[in-house]
Structure formats: structure tokens, C-alpha cells
Image (tube, rainbow, N blue to C red):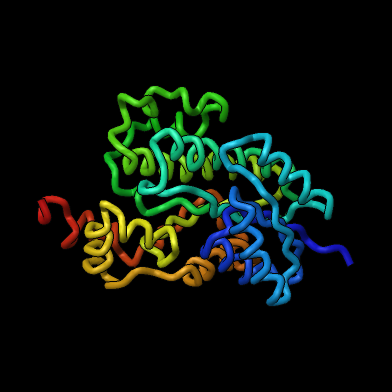
Length: 279
């Protein structure tokens, strides 16, 4: 019996949680820049009964993305996509964050959108961080949403003189992810498929631990201490949302971003995390 094919990028905790939640009975092509990480996660999942094939891929490379999609198509039509790949402000330079998180995600959504099967669905992972930066103009949002992918990094708002630091680059990348999902969901819809975004808050993962132990560690710890939930989230809670978005129960949801941050953004604007109360 032929299996539905699922592309998963980023061999991390959130990607694995989502793949375990909805990947049973499917052929999963798991891509990551680190083949060691990819094989490790694939091994864990395979040991739990999932059909996972590790694939070395670089989200910042269109050629690498195309190669992964081609590998997936060897097993049939691509029906599902989960994009959890990315780098954090403490892990990479401004240039790398924009190349991977912004450009790479835009290319992935575009390329998968060319082949996604009817009835298919996808989710990409952005971040609450995109909600805590100065509002862009409608034209700037439109540029992030609709600029041809190969021209994205040439936008004026993404030039070095207009990016303050790696956190600002990360925020811009995540804002772009959300706008890009809206734009690409229209194209996916023409193929009878859906595309959505999840914007997590602080989720306990190795990447988050890098942040906790990095220069902004106290900032992040204060954030979850003063958010309504009073704690960081888990990868499985993000999988709960993905399960809704990628199942028939979410059939009327596309082009949307689900903010899942324990109320941190609400607290940032209207509660104890307001900058004026902490400045």
C-alpha cells in the first residue's frame, strides 16, 4: 500500500513532536543540516515504529531544498510538510539568520507549494518574537510577503544598516515567515492544499537552552515568569496545534498564524512585561 509522503525539516524537538503526532503510517523524509542530528532523531522515531529516512539538507540553499523534495517524490506525492528548521539569535550572525530563517523558509514554502498534493497541508514554525517589534508599514509587510524569493534579501529594510542586531534580524525573519505563509497559502489553495504557521513562545528545547544560557538568558527567564502561563511550553503542546491545523478538523484554516506563547505577547503589551515597566 502506498504511503502519504511527509517532508520534515529541522531535526529538533518541535519537528519530532509534530512528526510523531501525525506521521504514523506515512513515509517521512527528515532533513537537517547536521546529518548526525538527523540520523539520531530518525533512529529514535524508527525505533518507535515510524518510517523515517534522514536526509542532509541546508535550508539556506534552494538546490538543497529541491534535492530533498525530489527524494520525497521518489516515494509518491508530497502530502504534508513540517518546517521546524532555523537558527536562533544566539547561534548565528545577522546574515545567517536572514539567509536561513527568512530566505530559506520562503524558498521551502514556494518549492513545496509547487508539488503539494490535493488535500495536503503544511505548517511552518515562526516565533512569538515577530510580534514584539515595531510595526512595519503596510508596504513593508507586502514586500516581505510578495517579493520574489531571490530578491528578498535585497529589500531595503533587510540591509545591514537597518538591522540593529541578531535579535532584530530574527524578529524580521519571523515576521516575514508569517507574511509569507499568508501569501503562499493562496498559491497552495489553488492546488487544494492548506498552509499555516505556528508562532511558539519559549519552548523547552536545546535551542531554548542556548538562549537561557546566552546573553539574553535573564530576559527569557523573566519572560516566562511574568507571562500568564507562568512557565515555558513544551514541544508536544506545539504538536497539539499542528495536529489541528494539519487534520480535517482544521479544514477551514489556512494562511493563519497561531500564537502559542503562554500569553507572553499579551503581557508584553498589556501586562508586567511591558518595556516601560521594566526599563
